Image (cartoon, rainbow, N blue to C red):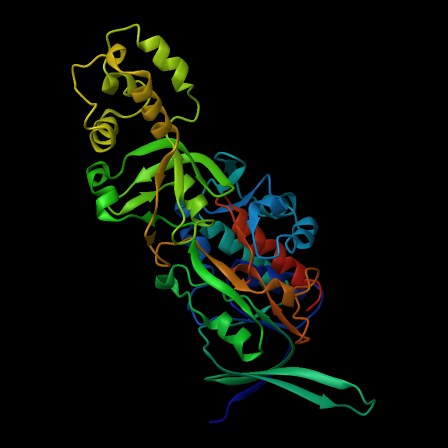
Length: 408
């Protein structure tokens, strides 16, 4: 039996957040859209996000919340599809939501509500589906018509069909969370067409440390501390979480997107405290260093931290008044700037997103179309635009999908 021949105006590979948004917008314009994916279920990354409640956007989205080798690239798409636009879509479908913190918006119910919303909108826009469907070959056809113009089309071959289309949209995501189907397919398409890819790395991910630097802290795995974490010029103030292998938690996930191998993290364990003043006040009392620090930090952490960094000066019965100024200054500096060097991340299996991706210098910021391959578009996580933690990456999916959907 031969392959089924199909003709579509738009073919979108990847039925995730960006792909479905693009399909909705293209379908609204009357375009014949086919949305395909190698997975059996749509929107798996949506389903597992936000602890099952989907942090679908952030009230305070701005270009500064994104990392890219071309920082201005995201401005156009973000300006044309705002958090208020997606909130309006949420309200249209009667989905209740709440703000957790720092502008992060979550469904009151489950993430499935967002997936259902997108499916309903796709169906309403006349989008056709082909799932599961594995792309075996993509060809670029250029023929000269009677008017001496060059017609450009793509031919996509799957195990069951051969599809010709004017516009091909790649919305295949990154390498993060391979257990739900993530793959390098989008980057392979870029390679086929000679489009550069900015080096890839796990982002929004936990960091691991050498045993010699961190072995003592394994006993407090699961403990969380409010801290400020810095790397080079980036700095984030949220919780850090101790794990069996190193550090995680919101502040660490955020800084991981900026960290590179060999670089040092600086952790301010008491960002709100003027320790110089606090020490001056407590030295008048007959309190010990561990008891003083336990006023601000968990006792178990204090015991390990003091034993690791100040074993020589730590005598349980020694009062703060007995410490020399130089000793206290050393303690203050360590508390405000604990310097540690990770040896790596926990990898793509645990990373929320993939940093790097399709070089944005190759794309139109208005349409997401490749400059050198007319009709080929890249959107969402596969592009070199990575958001901070807190709904920003989903909003990039909505806005980049919307942008492409207006032109495909």
